[in-house]
Image (cartoon, rainbow, N blue to C red; front, side):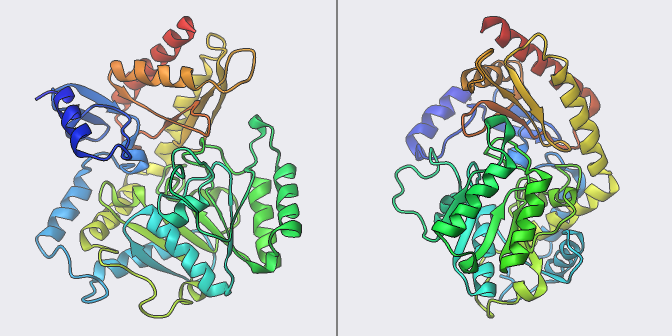
Length: 426
C-alpha cells in the first residue's frame, strides 16, 4: 500500500476541516523515529505536537498501560472510582508550582481542560469576563476559539464566539510590541471596556505554542500576577504545550517565580494516551458543586496509568536536564547559520521548546514561504518539522526529549542542509 493511495481515500472519507501537515501514513514508531507504510524512516521533530515528550512507546509507559489493560479499562470515575486517579492527582498537586494546597480534576483534552478552568474561575469569583492574548491558542471548542488570538483557521466560518472574552496584545519585542505597550492596552481595556472587578481570570500560555513559541517576558508575568492580586482576578496558566519537561522544568511557570491560581495541562502528561488535567488552589477548585465537573472519559484509567508512568520517566531519566542540554545544542547549531542565512530573524525558547523565525532578508517582513520551504526540504530528507506563528514564518522544534544522541545529530544535519539549501535558492 502507498501513502498516495491512502491520501486519496482520506480525502473521500474525512472532513477537509481536519488538516494534515504531511502525507506520511505511520506504520510504527519508536522513541524519536517513525516508519511509514512504505517502509521509509522519519525522525520525528513534532512528537504529536508535544505529546510524546517521553518518546513513542516508551517501555515504562507501555508496561504501565498493559498492566492497567489487564485489570480494567473503564468504569467512569464518577461511578466507580479508582486509586491511580487519586495517586496522579496527588502527584500533580505536589508538582504544579505554588506554595498552597491544591486539588486536581482529570478530563480528556487540552481544550476541555481550558473550558473547565474557565468554569472553575467563574464559579470561584462569581464573575464572568476573561482576558486572553493575541496569538494565543487555547483549543477548538467555542470557549477555546473565543480565547484563541488567531482568526484563520481557528475561527473562520464558525459564527459568533462566546461573550465576555477580551484580548490584549501579547508582548513580542521582535514584532514591535513592548511589555509597556501591552500593559497600556490592558489599562485602557479596564477603563473603556470591562471593569476589572468583573474579570474572573487572565489566561496565558507561559510560552505561546501555535502563536510562535514566544515566551512571556518575566516582567509581564509578574505584572499580571500583581494585577490579579489587586483586583481579585485569577491567573490561569495554560501549560498544555509547555508542560512535562518541555521547557527544562516540569512546568514553564517554574521559570517565573510566581504561581498561577489554576494550571491546565494535557499533551505530554499521557505519553501518547489521551488525558488532561486542571490543578489549582484547593478552595478555588472546590467552588463548583458536586456534579459540576467531570465527564464520562475524564481520567480514564488507562490514561491515568500512562500519566503516572510519564512522571516516573521524567524523574528517573532526568528529562528536565536533558531538555536543557538538547535545546542548547539545537540553538547553537542554528546560531552558527546566521551569517550564511540572513533570513534568520530569531532563535529562541527555553529547554527543548525551541523555534527559529524567518524574515525576508533586509526588510524584516515575515517570510512564511522560507519556513515552509525548509519544512518540505527536511521532510524530503526524512525529518518531520512543524511551522507555527501568526504569520506562519516560524519553525518549532518538539522532538521527544528522550531522542538518542546519534539520531539527534542526524536530525541537526538534515535541518542545517534544508536551511542552507533554502537560503541559496532564495
